[in-house]
Structures are given as C-alpha cells and as structure tokens.
Image 1 (cartoon, one colour):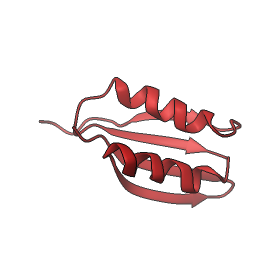
Image 2 (cartoon, helix red, strand yellow):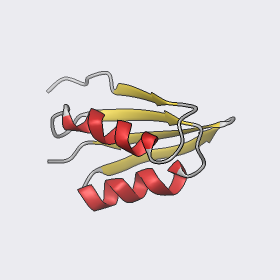
Image 3 (cartoon, rainbow, N blue to C red):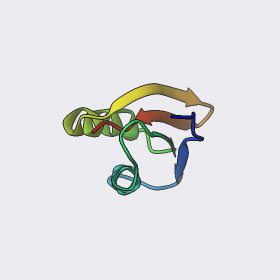
Image 4 (cartoon, one colour):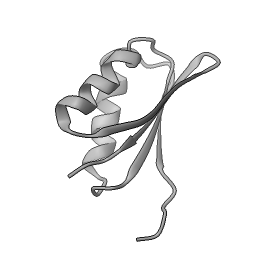
Length: 78
C-alpha cells in the first residue's frame, strides 16, 4: 500500500466535546492503517483525544504543542 497524505481535521476554536466528536466522525470514514492529523486549541484535548483513542483502540503516533495549537497524529486501527 502506498503512503497516503493524512486527513486533516481542524478543530481550532472548538471546545469540549467538539474536537473529540469531529475526530470520531473523521475516523468513521477511514480504513485501518490510515492517518489522521487533528489540530486543536482547546487544552482539554491533551487528555481527551488520547483517552478517546485508547478506549477505541486507535494509536496516537504524535502529540505536540505548536505555539498555541495542539497537534495529534493518529493511526486508525481496525
């Protein structure tokens, strides 16, 4: 399988629970092995998105703070 460009989800400016809901909605449409990059500004996402991924079996490949934004790279699992 060739490397695909990850889907990007912009949740900047949204507050809990919307960043997680937008992440969940995006993952529903992706196949196992796909990558998703989520951009957020809500500090709650630092806990909420990794916790949601753990519960649903997805892998957070990278979590970073870039200026005032939080970036999560997620690998969709089966």
